[in-house]
Every structure is written in C-alpha cells, then in structure tokens.
Length: 124
Image (cartoon, rainbow, N blue to C red; front, side, top):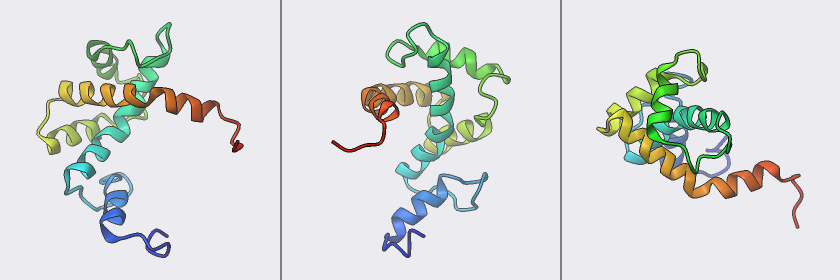
C-alpha cells in the first residue's frame, strides 16, 4: 500500500519494522525504527497509567509510578512487556531510561493528542 502510494523504501521499512515479532519479521535497524518499536507498546501502558490518576494526565506521572504498573502483569495486559524490554535492549537503554524518555516525549505533545481525540473530525 505504501509502495503503491509512492513511499520510499526507508519509510516502508520503518513502518514494517515497528511490528517486529508481532506482525512482521522486519527487524528495526535504525535508531528511529528502534524507538518506534520500543515506544509503541510502552505509550499504551503509560497512557493507561495516566488515566488511573486523578489528573488523568501524563504531566504529573512519574517513572516510579509507571514502573510499579509495569510490574503488574494484569495492568494493561495487552501491552507486551517483552517487546518493550526488547526495544530498550535494542537501543542500549535501561527500562527506566526508556520509560523516562517516553514520558517526556508524550508530555511534549499531550495537548495536541487531547485536541485530536476531542475533535469531531471536522476541519475549520
């Protein structure tokens, strides 16, 4: 589909590799691909943890809180801990480093994500 739309091979590889060992056998090679692979599952877990907080926001969530939820296998069970750990290893980061960097990245765009989620889909 991407190829038919004229996408270049590096983009196609990046999209395919983010599902490595889940939906594709294309291994992430470049740092951006590894970050996407690691963060895709982790963002779901962090967002679920944030929604459990009174603020329902990522702005005040701490690495320690996410790590506690991470250890609870029943929490956000659909988020593959194996993929998250493999992604951190691919990047040469500890799990705590990956969680911290992902939280910071999510904070940087939380307002935009909320705006899009609350949008009715119309263009102004």
